[in-house]
Length: 113
Length: 114
Image 1 (tube, chains in turn green, cyan):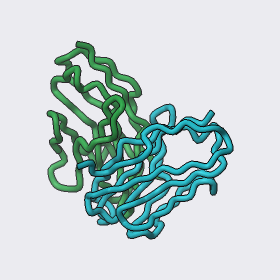
Image 2: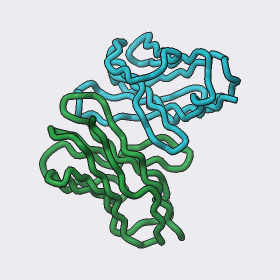
Image 3: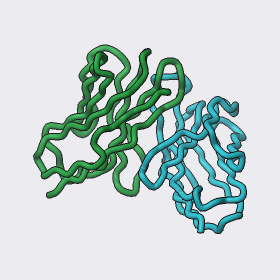
Image 4: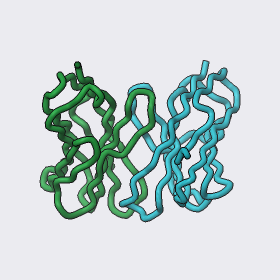
């Protein structure tokens, strides 16, 4: 079965620290990849997406992600986090020609001022 | 101005009751979804409709019945509520180009069953 795995469940960083959140998926065919963010008490918002082309994609608020096909990974990065980045981060995959978006279990990021 | 709106935002009810959650989108999308987010924040798809037609129906109890009167609305009716139904339910919408269209989410409905 298709699945998405986020390795870090809870990450605590100080402001200005660098961030990398891991995401791996299990699907051998074509995939479209997404990162969503959920700020406390809010709905999910799209951070960035990858369909094809340059495997390094840039999103909003200084986030970027790199697709490594050989590793089935799509890790999220930010060079310098801010307190306002405190949120839940969800990696998600749409396999092949399906409309079904499959989420990882999420990573709670807590940034200390 | 809200793109995907759900009502109510909070719903507290007793076991055995029947309740509905409404969802509307003004993005012109033709596909709508219901997701359930459990207490551990895990998000799982429940249903998806495209132009009023059911296209995804995950393993969800029959007590849950989605209804789509038109492509801008997708409501969720739940019969005989159980404690385990307590969760946050998110509505979402997208264009139906299968795989590339990102989902736009509503603000969620926090359902508490006592």
